[in-house]
Image 1 (cartoon, rainbow, N blue to C red):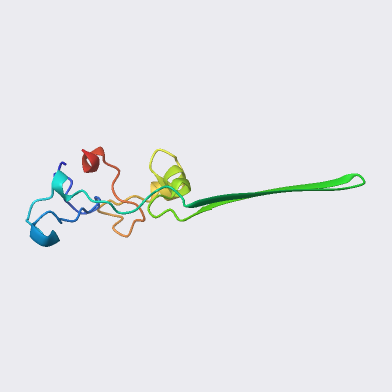
Image 2: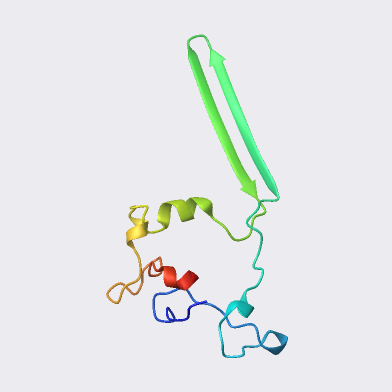
Length: 109
């Protein structure tokens, strides 16, 4: 894991690889841990079709429950490259209160 992104605006990583989960002063691959499942425990959907004479109404609802760490809709709509208002709110020295961190692949190497 590259630590060159260890500056303001980047993702933060926690050092947990020392004895008894205490920091050893180095953030590396040994600090990877299980933080939850992105897979839902339950998926559901509801489809309703109502017809009366020349009027019809259709509704469809779906959802998931029990997943811990992944919000697909947010990842799809708010990550830089999606060109939405939220994706333009990334950290910079002049925008320190941004909603998203600096967009950099170095955080994931």
